[in-house]
Image (cartoon, rainbow, N blue to C red; front, side, top):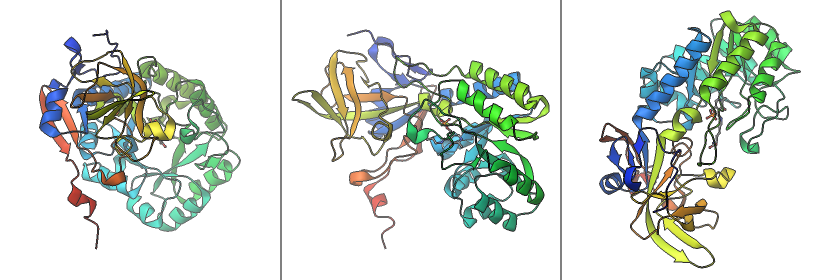
Length: 411
Ligand code: LLP
């Protein structure tokens, strides 16, 4: 068996002897017990990452800091409960995510509400939280619904370019999000007159590896005056394959906080960050079963999931590692294909597996962010369960969808 570099599996995983276990649970046994496809999480990794980020913010900035989990990355009640236990706040982007956060026990004071097209209903549901106002129409609507006690931040679009996929870049001047630098002063004046304007928010995009865009966005905020609070967003880049390197979170936060102290005089002010992916991506592994292996020009290994449980390859061309769960590594170069009725449904191209055969369990690591979140029922495929593993024990925290669920809304 070829030696496998396995840096992208969860910290609480083992690949000893070429056999994957997550949180002390053998991957093949998990597949047997719970079926496939399945999202399997190392619960200890979720906790460790939450502690790491909170610890880093407290060390670099002190107690006036908040780490708000961007729940869009993994909108799962059990994860939200876990992060609340670990002292994280939460960022939601719709009334639905707000509902989940409330159900998980979050108080209004621990919730940050986003959205570039919030409805009146969403604003009403969000009253009492910290609302990040995106645009002038929303500012007027909210001023009509709420009074001076309503805490708000204004989302500023700093006009910063980022080296990430265009679909997840948000800091550029021509963005659908936030107030432009030109419109910001008038919005600040209006918000300060009508609401409890706490400060400014900026989020330059997702899967950001460079420090520069964060620094530039902080510099842009500095031109807009001084505020008690700044929310600097999320977007910290994560490695999906062994040739990539995740952002060093401690170093990145140290640099961001230093920039905020220098440029925003932020030492005595409140600083928030909103990581999603960095908290959850590497904690999750998806397990599939191989249904067929076909050789034509390439070798096609088809599994029982695909674009219904992981849209990221199709949406962003995102690469993934894959392994046969009890024979990691290998040298059969193949495409890991999904089961859906389109040729684009390929989970990972040119991956090296160990002589894959029907019945094998295949694992794709780093599927903990935006997998469950963006899952869908294309081709009538029920969505997978979410299984948390720790200390050799596995618990289902979201059950597998059934075919009955597929017509549960029919009238
Ligand atoms: N804060 C705001 C205002 C955001 O819009 C986002 C992500 C985050 C924080 C968290 O970003 P993160 O730390 O997770 O990168 N579906 C895409 C990602 C979309 C991100 C949208 N906003 C993907 O699968 O890559």
